[in-house]
Length: 180
Image (cartoon, rainbow, N blue to C red):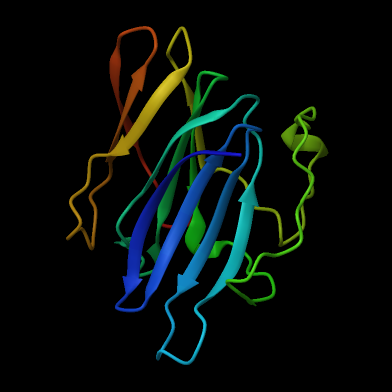
């Protein structure tokens, strides 16, 4: 069950889609629009981000950012019932097999315990957050990058805003070094 989602255009015919689930995961995929009326659109599943211990109430996708070393990143912020904000680099997410838009096989959707990061897969396929923050005293309803859509480079800090059930808005500073 999806609670929320965010879209970002990657090109004229491709969307990046991120959706938070009631089960604590963030699902990320690309949608490619049909090239003509006789074809189907298709989607490429990129990754499922795990680690939150509660429902995902908000996600945001940054514009593509060029780091000082020239490498590009696209960040995704997620917030949850667990009172954390997690920042992910979705430009490095591993892609699974492409499929068309017809219904696909259903995955398990029951609640389950969230494994510790130390117990999770550590291979190249594992997508781990580049940052985690906790500062609200109750669930976090929304998260937003403080960047314009025209952002192509950044200084030393990226602003991130969160909005909680505790009636506060918080401003965070994300600092990515050139190797993160």
